Amino acid sequence: MYVRTTTDQRPRPNTLDEFGLSGASAPFISLNEFTYQKGTEIFGEEEPAVYVYQVKLGAVRSYKLLLDGRRQIGAFHLAGDIFGLENGDKHRFTAEAVVETIVRLIKRESLQLMAAKDVVVSRNLLSMTTRNLEHAENHMLLLGRKTAVERVAAFLLEMDCRTGADKMSLPMSRRDIADYLGLTLETVSRALSHLRKAGVLTFLDHYQREIILNDRRRLADFDPQGSAQP
Amino acid sequence: MYVRTTTDQRPRPNTLDEFGLSGASAPFISLNEFTYQKGTEIFGEEEPAVYVYQVKLGAVRSYKLLLDGRRQIGAFHLAGDIFGLENGDKHRFTAEAVVETIVRLIKRESLQLMAAKDVVVSRNLLSMTTRNLEHAENHMLLLGRKTAVERVAAFLLEMDCRTGADKMSLPMSRRDIADYLGLTLETVSRALSHLRKAGVLTFLDHYQREIILNDRRRLADFDPQGSAQP
DNA sequence: CGAAATCTTGATTGAATTCAATCTAAGTGG
DNA sequence: CCACTTAGATTGAATTCAATCAAGATTTCG
Image (tube, rainbow over all chains, first blue to last red; front, side, top):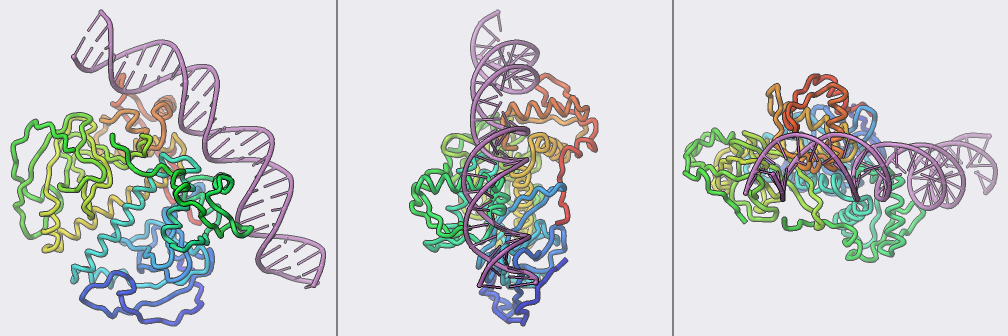
C-alpha cells in the first residue's frame, strides 16, 4: 500500500522539536523525510498506523470514501501540519499528496513510548487531537448548515488564515475543494466566479489557483460564522 | 447562564470509576448530580468550561448556531456519555437537555490536576477526545456526501447501536434529528415514512419516537457506509 | 375544552447537481 | 517546433433532491 516515490530518500536526523511534540526526554529521535509525487497515497484508510507525518513542503488531503466512490475530504494539511496521528492503531483516513510533497516521518511507537514517560509529550498529543476535533466540529457546521457561497467564502478565509501570505496559491483542484466542502466542482467554480464578480477577490492565472483577496472584511460577510445567543 | 433547575440537588459522593476516567490516584473525588428540565441549557458556547458532565439519565444535545439561527447539532449524549470535556477553557458547543435529564458533574480543574499526576487518567482523556474526533469525522462524511434517506438510516443504526434495546425510544424531536443530520424536519419525516413503507421499521406510537427496527440488515443497505478502495 | 406542540403529507419552489459545451494551459511525441 | 491530446476550469441549460409553504391530524397540556 505504501506507494512511495523514493525521490530524496536520504535519512535526515532531526530533533522532535521540529515536530512540535517535544518534551524533556528523548530530544534526539531521528526523523526521516520522504517525497511523494502528486496524487500518490501516503497511507490508506484502515491501514495500520505505523508512522506519524508532518508536511515539510507541499500539501496533503485526508479523505474517506463511500462504497460508490463519493469522497469527503476531512482536512488539507499544509507545510508544518501534522497528520496521520492516531490513538488507535489504524488510520481513519486515506492520505494523498495533493502536489509533490515532502513529509517528515516518525514512528508512532516511539512517540507513544515517549508520551508514556513524558507528560509534556502526552499533553501535546492531547492538544493536537483537540485541535483536530475543533476543526472537525466547525466543519460539521459548515457541511450541515451553510450555503455554497458561504462554504467557499469560509474555505478561502481558512486558507488565507493558514497560508498567511497576501497572495494565496491554492495547491488543490476545484474537485478537491468541492469534496472538502460537500459540493460539486461546478458549484465551487460558480461560487468563486460570484465572489470575483462581487469584487472581493481577483484571479491571477488561468487555472485560477492564484488568488488575491481584495477585501477580507467583505468576504467574511459572505460567511455567517459565529454563534448567536439562543 | 447556568440555568439550573434545582430538583434533586443533594450532593452525591461517587467514585471517579463511574465517570470512566479513573486512575490509581484520587479515587474519591466527590461528584454532584443535577437535574435539568427538558429544553434547559446546561452550558453555553464560549462559556468558561468549569465542569465536565456525564449523563446519568435522559439525553443532551450539543450544538453550534450561525448568526441567523441555523443550528447544527454535533452530537447527542445518552445515558453514560461524557460531554463538555474541553482541553481549552471554553466550551465549543451549547449543551441542552433534550428531555428531563440527570447529569453527574466533576470540576474540570480537579480532573486536570489528576491527569497531571496520573498517566491512566491522561490516557483516558486522550482516548475520550479521540472517540469524539472519530465521531465527528464520520459525521462529516454523512453531512457532506450522504443523501437524506442515507442520513436517516445511519442515524437509526447509530441510535440502535447505542441504546442496545430491541425497541428504540428516541428522546429527541424530528427537528433535533434534522439539525443533527443537516436536513429539515419534513425531510426527516418523509425519510422515516419511506423506511416504514419499505418495511424496515415500525412506529409504535403517534409521535413515533418508539421505533422497532424490523430488519437491521436491510436498513444498513440504505446506508452506504464503509470505504471503497481507491 | 381549547390551545399549543409535534408530526405527516401534499404542492410548489429553489439551490445545487447533472449534463454538456467550450476554453486555455500543459504536456507528448513525431 | 508544432499538431494533438489531456487535464483543469468556466459557463449554460436541464434536472433533481431537498427546502419551503401550507394544510391537516393526533397528542399533550393548561
